[in-house]
Length: 450
Image (cartoon, rainbow, N blue to C red; front, side, top):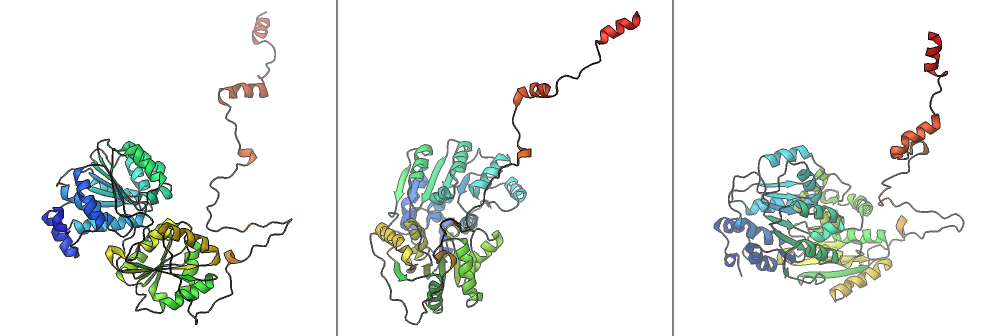
């Protein structure tokens, strides 16, 4: 099948020709007629299979020119980086189409976004939180929205957007088409579909645990963090083979720690993204990696989920993920658009159980590679790897820098107040009593007259 078989219009054909795309991916071919029909749809496909074009091609084909100011298509995505990416993809497909696209997300000036909305738009791409804020401000009118598209919905639910999504469903027009894409079908996703979708048609391209055939997988057994650093340094020195590498780590502090270790060797080739970095820093890092200015990108799971970066030669799992589905999302960053890819995973003894869960999900074993002889096996341990010695009568609790701090604190006693309600005046009266007068005023007056 080619894009000619999808009955696209000439402007879309010309845009696809400029991009060099001739053959649709399976999810694009399967979803086109369903989305075009106006029915609710749930698409299940792994990352890297072209889900953005799968819903945008039929939407753009049927989106007629209009001068109205209110948006007609709403696309919700979980992260700011995905907003930027989806807007960019839509603009590429809309090269020969006259439409207006806007992306909005938190962390930036909301008044600037309000001004842009007031100028009029056709397609709005947003994160759930910022969209809801704009809707409540009444600047964003929702009466014209005909299609709601939720991309990476499983990530949204993992990030705690469930209540915001439910609130958004409530304020949107009832007569609309719902389109949802997810890499995994979890129970939470299923509940959301049953509550808000009307007899949706399901398009499933791959089971969530099926590895892509074009990705070669390898595993290295490593004892500790510093040995992993030595191994990844050895591999990255092969610049010809490891020419565009995405390294996944478990959490933010590990990302900074690995960046510090590699920065001395690969300074001009290295960048890092996680949620503690500023928005401009994150966008700049992704753009430099996408353009080839940086060869190596260190990232956490949430930040890199759904990002469309072409020609990633290897994905290195510096830490073995606790959840096997996350491993599938990680390795899906390479081998995109049916290209060849390579995925490596480093595992310590503590991470072997996670490896077993991954292999069970995929129904295959990851081949174990021989550890390179000239790579130093370090005996140094980081704080998390050292045995925790606790005195019996003096237990110590290690501080978790990545754990969220307390959201609330107890009020001091003097600031604690009791809501006394209507009984307040009676309690005050009982406490202070009525001021005493010097005798009966009327009696005194009468005596004076006498």
